[in-house]
Image 1 (cartoon, one colour):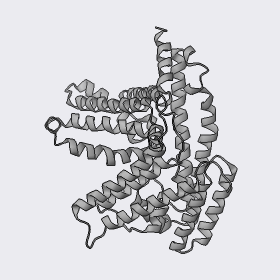
Image 2 (cartoon, one colour):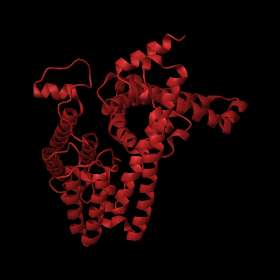
Image 3 (cartoon, one colour):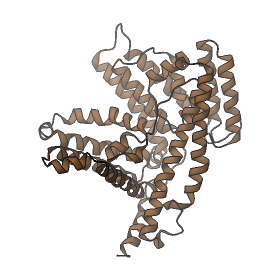
Image 4 (cartoon, one colour):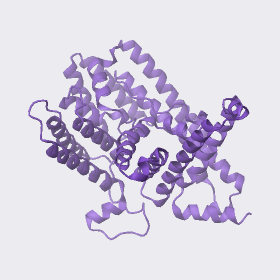
Length: 419
C-alpha cells in the first residue's frame, strides 16, 4: 500500500478527495456513512509511514476492550457493583497507559523487551506508533466518562470512528466522544455546501501557515543555529522568538487542516488555539493554547489530584496552595507526556510554577486598595505589559522544550561566559 505524509503531500490530498467523494456520495444512510468513514480511516492510517497492520490490530483490540468496558459501566440495568466498576475502569486505564508508555518512552520499551538500557533518556526507541499520544487520551476519556455514566448514545461503530478518525489522529485536536457522536449522527446539521465552503477556507488558512509562514521562520529557529557555543544573548533570544512563532504557526496550521478536512466530511472538531500570544498572563495563554489538551489535563489530571489533596489538612485551609500544587503536578505530567527527557519535566515544572506565581499575583492585585494601582491594572498599558511579559516567559521556556539536557547545558555555559 502506498504511504504518504498527512497534509504535506500530493498523494494525501488525492486520497482525501477519494475519501470525501466516498463519504459524501455513498454515505446516504447514517450507518452506511459511518461504515464508509471507518473503512476510509483505517486505510488512511495504514498509509502513514511507520503505521503497520500490527498497529491497527493493537488499536482494534483497545477499541473493543474499552467499548466492552464502557458498555458494562454504562449499563442502566444490572450495573456492576461499585468495587467492580472501579476495578474495571482502573484496569482498562492502566492497560491503555501501558500501551502509551511502551510506544512513547524508549527506556520503558527496552525494559519490556529485555534490551540493555542506553545512557540518557529519549535515545532508546526500538519501535514507535504514530498517534499513540492522542488516541490513548481519547480512550481514557471514554472510560472515565463511562464510569461516570455520562456517555450518550453508545455505539460500537460510532466509537471506533471516534478513536481512528484520521484527520485528528496524528496530533489532535483531542475531541470528546459525545460531541463527536452527535456530529457524526447529524452531519453537523448543515448543508453540504456550507461544509465545503467553511472546510475549504480553513484548509487554505492551514496551508498558508504551514507552507508560507512556517517556511519563512524555520531557518531562524534556535535549533538551526550553527553552534550553540557561539550564540550571543540576542541570537539566543531571537532564536527562541522565532521558534515560538514557528511552533504556533506549524501547530495551529496543522489544526486548521485537521478541522478543515473534518468539516468537509461533515464532522466538527474542537478549536485548539485562540490567539494565545495576545493573552495577559501565562494562565490565560495556556487556556488558549492547545486547548483540547489543556482541558483534558484539567479534567483528568488536575481536578482528580485537587480533590484528593483536599483531604490533607494544610491544603484544606490554604486553597491557593492546593490549586498551585495541583497545577504544578499537572504540568509536570504535561511535560512527561510530550517527551521522556529530563528537559520536558523541567519545562512542565517551569510552566506550572509560572501559572502558580500568576495566580498568587492576580489574588494580590485584587487585595490592593490603591485607586491609582487599580486604574493601572484595568488600563490598556497594563494589558500590553502583561502580553509582553507572558510571551517572553513562554518563549524563553521553549529552551527547555527544544533542547535536551546536554545541549541546554552547552547553551547556558556559553551565555554565562559572556557576563
